[in-house]
Length: 109
Image (cartoon, rainbow, N blue to C red; front, side, top):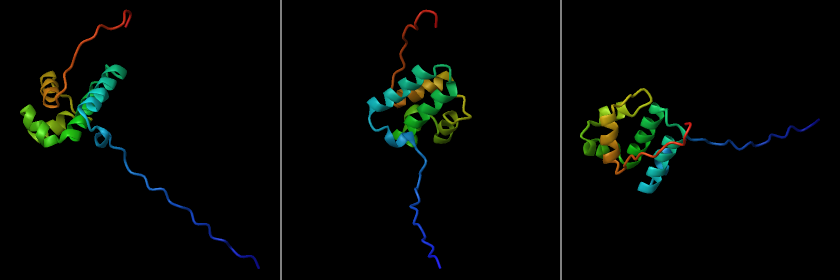
């Protein structure tokens, strides 16, 4: 007779990664948005989501209040399906303590 040896396999628990949990300082928030603007300058939805990530890191209710928007409309505007107006983007950036700036593109870009 042979003995069956049961192996204990440790189960790995995974959790969803939420970048908002890792955006702690204004410098980290600015660097995150800057990375989106640099790496995907034509991805308006991605940039809006990045603003949403930063807003969640700071507290969506406070950002909405500072931007003069309702919390619901801010969530909607910065969601994957959202398409915020440029005025909304500017209000949110100001409420987040961020400034957008222009830089000359490399020639041929």
